[in-house]
Image (tube, rainbow, N blue to C red):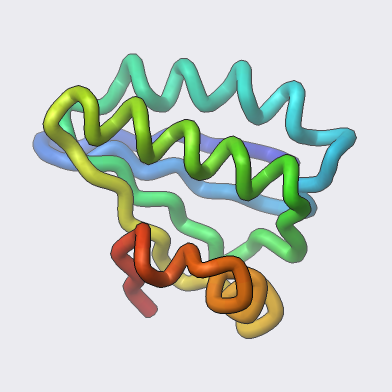
Length: 101
């Protein structure tokens, strides 16, 4: 899993590439802290190149959402491929996050 962080005036975007599985979760948790530190309020997770998300990855997404909301912000998931969208739908994440195509 690779996370690239891009920042503009109002939004911080985390571009995720690869598989967010159990093996990648530890590093993503570290990278996620940098993402939060760089965010003013709104975080976009660009998942166009994310191939897979495990339960560990889902837990980290929930943690990111909780921390961002506690700071008065929100998280949007953008461009998830169909198989990843299906995981979000099955687990109920579609009710917790904003989604963009």
